[in-house]
Length: 399
Image (cartoon, rainbow, N blue to C red; front, side, top):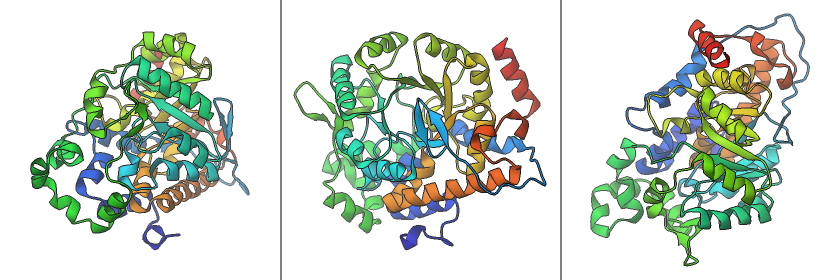
């Protein structure tokens, strides 16, 4: 294990966040760490977990803990998958390949973002576990058809379609840090922002040896060239996903389709009607529309709305194994972790992702033992107590 992420220096995910902040330039760290507008939802995603309390069963011996679960027909050793995180290769050259490799070794799945610097074929080959592909319709349906065909040929297990990016959210930190200018502007436009890169010489050397700003290898345009990174913001604005697109995708993709970005009972039911094999309760980590519900708070409403018609996953604000347990108690089949492992990636590449997963596994096992529960699959609502207003909301949604 790399010293930078070994205990006692790193004992929780927040420690990985601090190491990452020291290693990468501010523009890269704030892209990973920040949210949209006033970052209200970003904060609430984490705070919501503090509002849910446990109801343990004491005087119970738990000699072993079974963390296994089954998602989309996949047997996973852990109740979490690694969520799609765009631009991972800018955080560390290991990028998506490194994260997928660690996920496979841990016995769980990895979801690859369309906006990645490594080819999906290389990412799939790097992992011994299931790899799913998260799709944006960047470049339109014709370009997406080629990407979907590649994902199918590579053996991806599922297609995750993100529905909450009609336009990119206003991420104020990125604007202040000159992200657009640093990634693709002229030499003159870079000057006001270049000092933050020069103060991280080790990251800069790794970045340059890796070839600099990578194009989007999984978005191949009509001219046969990958989409340059700088064009992504404009491309997303012209790539909003509609329910009609899901009908088209069912023809292009024979496997399970996951709808990511559901926060209401109405959207959850519509996703079921459109044939979704699973929905992900997600607000894009607080990076799109600000002041929407924290995902943990929205989870009971979605679970009540869909019943057993489809699997429910969730992401957002997860920093500890106890957070994962709370989400499963509220009806999630499993969760997706994003920043929790991405901090590790930015801190130390593949070694940092490994450390993040180790921390979460230890947290999970300790929490289960203290609850008096031996298996993830035995968790239910009786192990937690919710604020009264949450209960009212989920009851109204199921009515």
